[in-house]
Image (cartoon, rainbow, N blue to C red):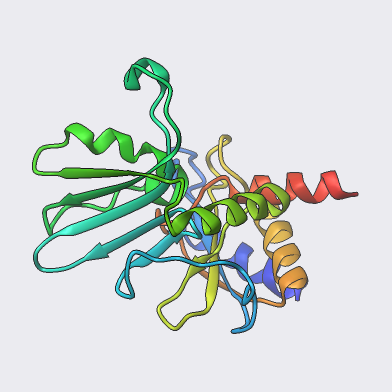
Length: 219
């Protein structure tokens, strides 16, 4: 499986590669790993609603309707210099215009939802995480990410998937070799199927590195 995946990724990289080195997005590619239906079946789950898309398991969700764009993030904690006094983690709900662009940080660093607290046309509601139904799921998925280096996304059909990314032309992002290693490791460990996809900003660009770091630490 790894050899086939490697060939597919290399082929996808070459299709958009820029030999001049002037395009930082050259060779960008993604791998979508879809897990079997019973994977993570025992994991605690919570969602703001059935029509929300999970950006990061147990932490961030988004919903688009003709009326509004709603983003929910669990485990948000304002820095002390901003909050003014110590406080525990919270659940933030940001409701903006229907045409609001989904910020990339929902997949990368959801806690940056705090940046929306002064965004024009956006209302932010806050509630303590302690005692909230999202608390157990947030804690469990935080432990999972610490152990394995990633959080899957919940698909509309109830299955989980993971989008892994590489940007070979950017030294501050994973390359294609690292993408192959991380994708093969996750697919093998959790029984997922890997499919090479066009690059998408709707993914955590550093998950590949975390997966490989956690794997090395377990050796």
